[in-house]
Length: 297
Length: 238
Image (cartoon, rainbow over all chains, first blue to last red):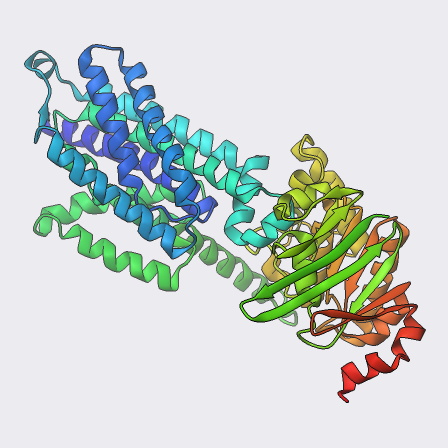
């Protein structure tokens, strides 16, 4: 019986991470704007959704409101934030999340525990299904964006902002659009987590862990791809669970940190790129054997 | 009159990069913009294309004031440009590169399929037919230059600013590039060409504008201008 709840918890976390990392991927991977304040939007979504849900409103409404709050906040800070470019944008967003964390940690109670009525009927199954639905919706949406006119524009910004402008792309507007979608979906992920948690600490909801987990997952899986964050999430949760069996708590971060460095330095395409490389290598070596005289590049 | 540049000045700190620049371009013109290194040619392109704001002066396109507009607005308004060092969208295919131009600078209401088909034609026009699915990393230097032009053409420009498209090309490749410039001209696009390769610029342009230290020092028919004493001095020193 415990085995089963363990499994459901794994799945729920995996799906939550798929949502969160995919939301980061849209802005960081496809648009090339690395937001290190992603936890702020996760936290806002989580807090809003949780309080609205506990207030007694229907859960879908609470989730939507949380996501909307995250996107609204993004709209407010988006205008000044995108005046910053490159590394300044990264630092700015990082600081922002830390500020919010401190604020909410101070003004809200330490832990928000579910009322006993809800706690007594707590079941993992609906949490699992919710995380599944949200993950599927978010992945489908990001996939749709990536294949659309919008996706082309976002990728052009990632590749070269000047060339994008010169080709008619309103870079400011589309960066902001990507930021809004990214933060809205991060807020959704937050809402899922708020619904999952029996006890939520505001400080933890805004913790930088959420950002860095998402970043690591995206890069290890394959940045700027749809499958990357999915594979990355499965890999991340699996490895995290396995490592926690043998190593003291938290040391999975050490392993992932090293993995992250290796990927950034030697495998810029992540696991996805690595697999594609292997495929190409094996198919080209087959070709080489077939036609010796021809040089295959 | 298609383009009017009126008394445009731009300085960086103490350095005046372009000073009281004035010229006009008529529809169908091929203008050669030449001058020694650092004479303000690329700065002029940046000013017309909206990448820099003039300190003084005015730029009008089809009678509308476009001074200080963002580059994407200028592009949508009908002025496309290429960059001296090509700036392809490296992580995308050749076709996707061109489609960005078509969907954002050209017709935003196009369907993706439609844009794809049209951009395939543009790729064929610049000599990259069949290379639509190639990643940029698989393209040679000359193909990247062609891609840069294809992307600019996809925005359906009335005027195209070509920044040193001949640099780094072999003589044979240069002939191909010249044919392309002529084909673009014949398709009805007005051109301003910045170029170091004199042979190339003399062959294609109707009129030359010569810059030195950010100022226009000569303007006229190509053969007249290259025999002009001030121009020769500017190039060779006094």
